[in-house]
Image (cartoon, rainbow, N blue to C red; front, side):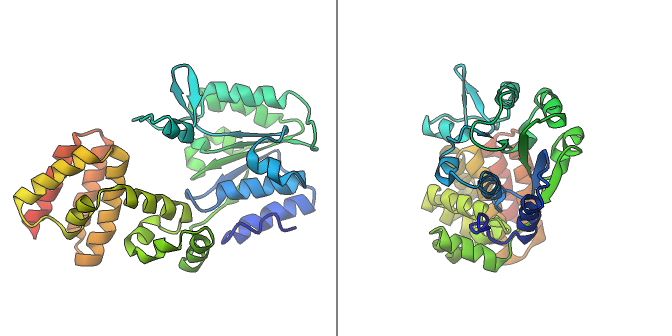
Length: 307
């Protein structure tokens, strides 16, 4: 069985899922838990291919009649849009996407019909932690009596999912990858250039997916802003101007990423815990919807006065 050959660095997950198929002990529901970007969604796709034992292209294209892949969505003008669809339409949202009650009802309707081509139906829920309580409760009955189906929920930790749902799932753990596995994945996927950026590699914290996302974010930030922030303002005037430029040119998501990047960069340069603590406080302020320009001004002025 080589369905899991694309998945690198998660031997325990591969063993658990492979043995479930070999011994014909497929659980009604699984909970794939671990950090973002370490292979949970890829493992779900590999597991589906193994269970269906064919139709790999249709699975990858998402048009197999017995597979339903559910992602969190935004609500926009009466339509549900995934993050990718929202990005393609140029929509900006302050709140993150969620799995909605209507999507759970879609799952229930999907599972109410018998499989068409496979021996079972499979439902994959990405970011299951985004389910509101009403949606989670609606899913419970289906988990109790899934019929000829298997559900795969993907979440960072069990604590982020309703405990009654967790109790009905077999847990499959995923872990952060070591440097060698990270380098292998990034090289294989055509992202080897990331290895030349130690701060980006550190921000990723053992997650190839996060490394790729961080590198893309790095490329999107104007070079003059990144260079000025990395070398650090040398005067109060420079600090205020840099804060203005960051507020003007970067959205909240990019600003939060920049804080992560600067924490790594500043630590490598100065090894001063006080600076890292101030950047962490800035993160908390941004997440609390404080005025971004004021947050950056206070942060840069404070750190500049300490130098």
